[in-house]
Image 1: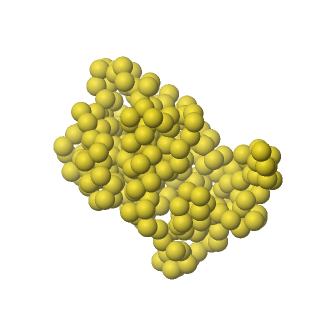
Image 2: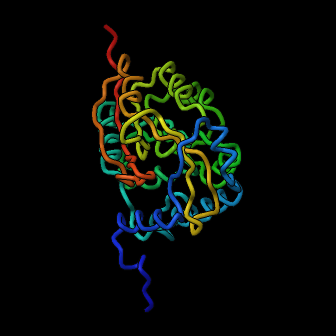
Length: 271
């Protein structure tokens, strides 16, 4: 069997190595989202949808173990803090979960954790996504537990979920704090964030993410948030229950580092 340098490097070192080669990762510091978008190639949503659909159908049928970002894995890569948070919430809700998975693709996180959630008295997993993902989700994946919605408000008033999850999603919105303000106003009891990118220090930063071509050809804007600003945004209404390191850990960002983080918030009781 032939080996290359990438075959011999540990995952974290490999990530740095590939970024130094300029192959993929996060680059630049842009003044506006529009400026970063002009520098991006964009992405073919139908191509991404097709890859995600094919991969998740294999997971659904039991032909594969795990999918993330359309990539297949031979074992599930759990976010144990997130799973613990889901079970913690269920324990307070009569062994029930009713959540919105914002930007949840076709159900990657649902299938990732289903083994540990299938015993619950009630499991209502509602995904809010782009139109083509929702249409595909309704056609190929929707069941009594998994539902798909085009709009957050429609999902909220139909299902009355008490929890919202952002797993690698909020940093890809042009106006993330506008969305977070809407989340706060809707009054979710629990907020879950996983795989969310933060800057080592300084102001929020807009970067350009270049996706590895073996996943799909794409580049698009992505935020790195200031941690203190992010936490302060919720502090009046929510209690931070736990903060944890997410999947990617430290992320090379030019001559600095960003971090992949997760948070679990619970709404403060009215005084």
